Length: 144
Image 1 (spheres, rainbow, N blue to C red):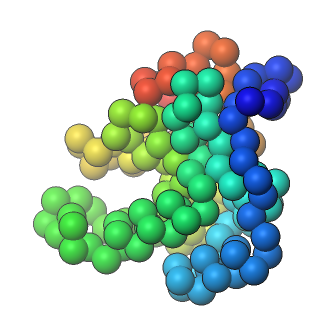
Image 2 (image 1 turned 90 degrees about the vertical axis):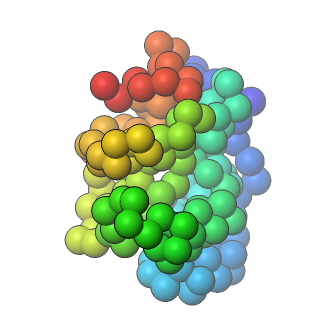
């Protein structure tokens, strides 16, 4: 555990190297948004005090997005996921994503029960401050 954003405890990991990030982008077929890439070069994911992966490790980002984009697992159930790059979750099934088409810094939460996509933060930094806040609700719905 290490403290981020003014004393908020977070579990951080070893950084991702440039070669791993390039390989991930090759597999994804698109660039990782700049701020997310910068964060991953500092730590390969971030977990909160309850060990919820508010930012997934790079390998999980790649695997989850390839699964969502393939459409095979979710055919006919949900709107397309192509415009989104998922990068974390709340431990309760809802997942957080950046809009990559068109590219935006905004973070949205995808509600797995309703297929709604709700704006929650104006970028990764704001998202992390809110997700890791002491009054945050791990596994809950702090964004509502």
